Image (cartoon, rainbow, N blue to C red; front, top):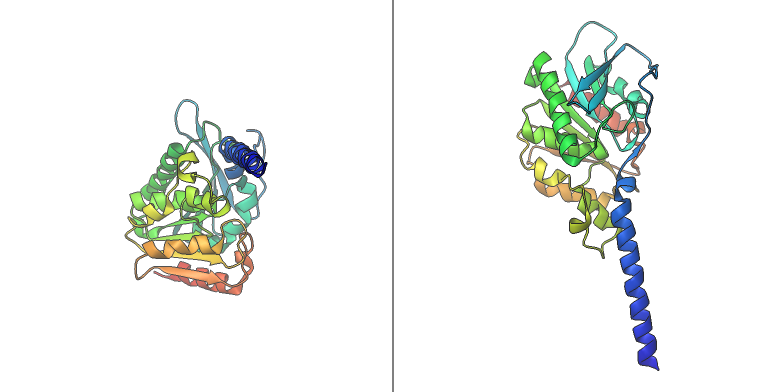
Amino acid sequence: MKKRIVLRWVKVSIIIYCAIGIALYYLQERFLFHPEKLSSAYVYHFNGPFEEVNIPFNKTDTINMIKFFPGNSVRRGVVVYFHGNKENIERYAKFANNFTKHGYEVWMEDYPGFGKSVGERTEKKLYEQAVQIQKMAASKYGKDSIILYGKSLGTGIAAYVASATVCKRLILETPYYSIPALFSCYAPIYPVTAMSNYKIPTNEFLEDVKYPVTIFHGTDDGVVPYRCATRLKTVLKPTDEFITIEKGTHHDLNDFPLFQHKLDSLLELR
C-alpha cells in the first residue's frame, strides 16, 4: 500500500514538473518582453529638444528611435541607450536628462514590437539592429565620444555591442549574467540552458570588452537578484567597477545619491 502511494506521488510530481516546464518554455517570451505598441501616427511629447528617427532595417523591419539633445549647442558626444523590457521609449525618456545635462545626445531605440518599431524580434536581430545604431553614432562622433548604456534587458544588448565595437565606455544598470542564468535563479530545477530561446550571455560579451565597464546593481533587486548579478564580477577587468547600491531595487537606482554622483563623475571624464 505504501509503495503504491509513493509511486502515485512520484507520478503526480513528474506531471506537475513537466507541466510547469512546458508552461515556462512556451511562455518565456511573455516573461522576457512586455512591449506596448504605438501607432505610427502617435505624437511624442518629451521635455526638451528631441528628434524622432525611423531606421529601415530591411523590407519588413523598421526601428523607431528618439534622439534627445542637450539644451545648449555644445555636444560632448552621444550615449546610445538600450532600455529595459517594458512598454516603450516613453517609459525611459525621463532618464535622458542624466546625460543631456552633461552635454551628451541620447539615442534611444525601441526594440521590434515596442512602441513604433515593427518587425520580427529575435536575439540575432536585437544584436544586429543595436550595432547598426552604434555605427550611425560612430559616423557622427569619434569612438572616444560614444558611451554605451544598458538598463535591465538592454544590458546584455549593450554588452554585445561593446564587445563588437570600439567606444569610450560601457555602463550597465541592473544587468544579468545571461538569460538562462537568470531563469535558473527562479527555476533551478529545470534545464534552463536548453529551454531558453534567448541566451544573451552578458558574461561572455564582457570578456571581449577592451574599454572601461561600470556596473550598478541594488542589493534589493527583485527582478535580477543581486546574488545572480554579482557573478559578473568574475569576468570584469581589474580596472572595471561593480558598484553596489545598498537597498536599491530594480527600478529605483536613479533615486540614490551614490548612483547619481558616480554617474555624473563618469560622464565628466574626458
